[in-house]
Length: 241
Image (cartoon, rainbow, N blue to C red; front, side):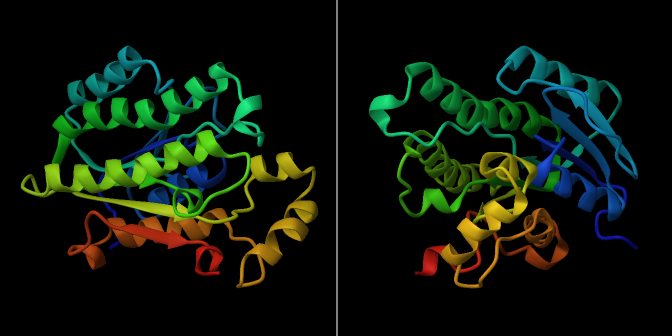
């Protein structure tokens, strides 16, 4: 039997990059997956339902979970993956609007989704939050993004304590340089991204979205039942330097 057969999984930012790999992993393992993203999503294989939902809009988030409740669904897994990334600039060049948008999407968005999902979660439920290596080490020009990802580590630890008695485990994953379409767009080509980022990772290359999906598989599987409040660094040794 597939690891997540018969389970219901919700993934934010599921339309592309790491989020899409996570959706595809759960679907391939037998889950019913609900992928939330801002706009239209390319078709998925397996039992996947795509939903246009802005996680900043609390009313829209609550309406989505009310729809699941009305259908008699309970949630086994929630992955808070959606995130906004600002320009790489010093804080004096970062606009208040950029700062606010990053905080709202990356922190308040995760709050909106998690708060709305918990009443539908079964005992034995699992929540995984996407943090970053930039939550562990500094990065020039990334003060807003790094701040939000540091917040996700604290969010994870406190939430793990709040939900332990309910039998819900909460962990986070901190990716290093992952070759997503967003990263490729930033550098102009996949090769340019690899040339710049590979030397920063002792393992000698960037990661793949499936590397993060595999880590989430473990954290949500029956093989990690004693793991909660933890962060899983998937960074090719980036933070070990």
